[in-house]
Length: 619
Image (cartoon, rainbow, N blue to C red):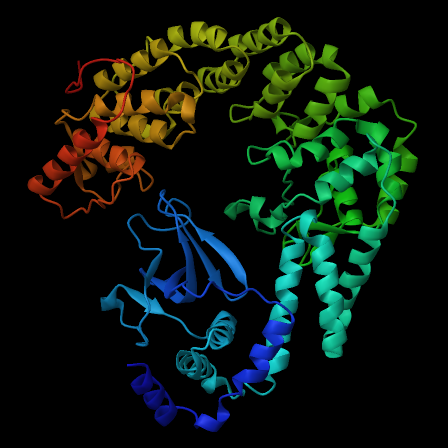
């Protein structure tokens, strides 16, 4: 099969003489110890995480491990990747396929193969290194086929191509954390001695800066520099990934608070420690603005950020000055060291307490509060917590109807004060707000005191109506799901189930959908299963075209013209329980019944609290 494949490739595209001699490439790979798959790792087609139309695109890779949770570990080119079925892939879509020499580009096959990536070239070298020269040459022919149309010779300098791939791999390892840096430095030095053409531009600068990073004297423990270097050495990915899709536009600068938004994790803890020092951290950060030591952070343009870049990002948070957009990328532009030094000369004489009080709120042109600046609120909470009650009152007086209170509520919850004091402030704050914002505040309160949140939440849920007049998505019954998800209390879940059952069918589906999408976490997984299972006998049908204005394009199961509540609940449960079934609008009653039965069998092995017997809604 392989021989025939090579013959076809040779006859159709390039003469065999065009294929580079693989022995020098294998010698280079062996000499520099580039990543190699185990001899028993099979060659497969692995999903690239991209699609051509509705079908996935797959490229050659080595399958290293299949895990019990359905994820796989592969070696694609020189980099190990972990592909998880729950992250970025269509439900039921296979992460890998058996390798065949056939180039699949027919959508009827359900997938497409791609050999034009540079990882295919590397894969061929890895195959040759373990003695499979026939398959290696076949891969190179396919790789060349992808480059024939652009007039280039992909094998013009094959050894240099492989060396560049290896250099890129080493740069990628820098972004994987400080634990790799000494080994990367040693390998880069050997590589540049072997291939001097690589030691230019950014690669040369990276090696110089990496050496300076490793040779630098450790900073004093507990200093701003120590916390900054700790943060710098932790893998962070691209900061651009935190920009929402709607944020990239010329209308206004986007201010992404990397440290206090919902995506900020434990890896950002050292940076938060710096920001919470407020003005006290500024002199040390100014001194580091031109520091060229490397970090494990990647700017959105693909460059490895330096310590000075991170110092500038933290000054942005501390200063509370909205960024300006880059006119070409529409992303926040980095301000120069001169800008920050001038800002500090003008600011250092200002009282810090008043500075942050004046910057804690975002306002519109008429002075109405539209939101909160999280860093300013957090600094106040840690340095001037006595201001929090008054700020909450001011928010209630000045906030517009769509204002977001979460930044201020989160600051109160994180304040280094007694639990009772924080509960009192949040409860009073919630008591002054309209229902929608009150629900948000009670979600935050639940993270501080579940019982206090429950006592305030239950009276809100009890009188909720059973019918909606306008679009379902914005009703309090729906937004309450985010609060319920935070509360590990059976009383709240029982009440939310009760009001869903009596709600009209469109509102009921919205409530089920929103609760399923909310971050329930491990603490409420069993309650969510119980909640959804309670609808498996609910035969009420949502007819999309009966009231299209109430549903809209973003409504649950918008692709299904008609869907029963029990089927919608089964679909949600199948996803949570890891079933591979992918419901389709064309399904008939028999197919839906099979799904419900499969879900019930899977649920038999689960345990959950008693929220109420299976019902039929509208009770």
